[in-house]
Amino acid sequence: MGTSYMRVLLVEDDERIVNFVQRGLKAEGYAVEVARSGLEGITLGTEGKFQVIILDIGLPDLNGRQVCERLRDNGINTPILMLTARDTVQDKVTGLRAGADDYMTKPFAFEELLARIEVLMRRGGGEIKLEIKEFRIADLILNGETHEVMRGETLIDLTPKEFALLECFMRMPGKVLSRTRILEQVWGYSADPLTNVVDVYIRQLRRKIDDDFDIKLLKTVRGFGYKLDAS
Image 1: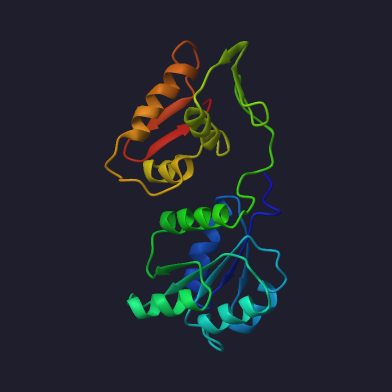
Image 2 (image 1 turned 30 degrees about the vertical axis):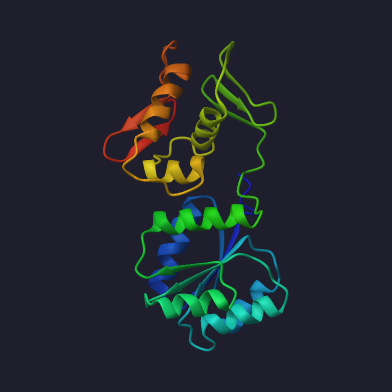
């Protein structure tokens, strides 16, 4: 699935956070490496093989700001997301001035962490999209190079946004995606969660890829979101 280059470095000594983040990111297809001290974080981070670095402020040796400054001094431009237990403006300003790209306060929801990582990857030119040219679920085929979508022998005409929405589902077949996650993935920002734009586009996409076919692929999972699968 291309996970060999979707690499995240987690610099964190709290085992509960390590387990929570590592388990969640691995399930999303990321390769996660863990450094449990500031010095180890600098050593691994300086190798430049990661797309994002998640860096805790409170480490047992150096603090996160020092690690961040050292990495930037070493010429490492990898996007850095700082984690802290304190939610003060001064903490955020200090972290950002040290070279961090974003800031999250503990405790946090995994879905928000995931969205922040994805934004940082895009902003940093990271290879967030898997290098797969063609996706297939049942008789539905999406070609990432030609931007053609076929259902059996039928060519389906999609708008660019509908295509992006379908591609989002086809990259994660069978996985339930929440409206928040879809907004972040397809629209690229955290839009107003009360908006019905996702539901509108889901209806449009369903009409094009499902309505005229016996097997329905795009399914609503009530209370959670939507998924694409052939089961």
